[in-house]
Length: 280
Image (cartoon, rainbow, N blue to C red; front, top):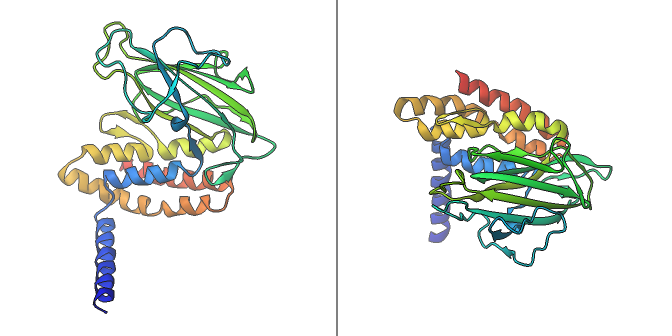
């Protein structure tokens, strides 16, 4: 009886603590947890599948490159080449498009997917579908970028694909600057397969981006602003975001329908509300 009363008391206290936290408005940690849950709704994490080999040569960009010298990483996000001029390394992985990405089936007739990547430093990403260079906006299957913020995900969409298609991805990662080296070195930050095409129109403004310290749009921008603001400015921002973040339940509910179009619409609504709150 005593144990049962203690359990009830703990549940009541936990409930009121949760309600109190919600009433105070979202924190940076709250949004980090929400983003982690949301991003799994319509995408698949590819990072755990990567193999790695340090060094530029021999090149591993070809679809049939010899992976003998590569090894799986316990931590795919580990950094390499700190303070080393000319530091570079290769990541590679192969995967088959699954029948579902997150909560949603990949249509058997095909859908435009995208591979999102982000690397600390500079990177070139080579993509092959069923043995051939892929990516409509890429050059011979290659995209490249450098010095992006950690929340700026480069996509090589569109990749028209259907369940069972075989993809091979090779990433050359380099320290930036390369000549004198970087104290941070280089390292994989983000690598996911996701729904693209019309879904991108709702997804991009929903997550937004961080374009400067303390500034940004969407959920990522809101989290950045919560991280940097203090005192009254922080409380004011939390008050403005309280309603939009509470109503993210509608996005999760849309995902449960199994229709990607419903998630796109819910993200459009939520993204607009979040961005309006950030402007006020």
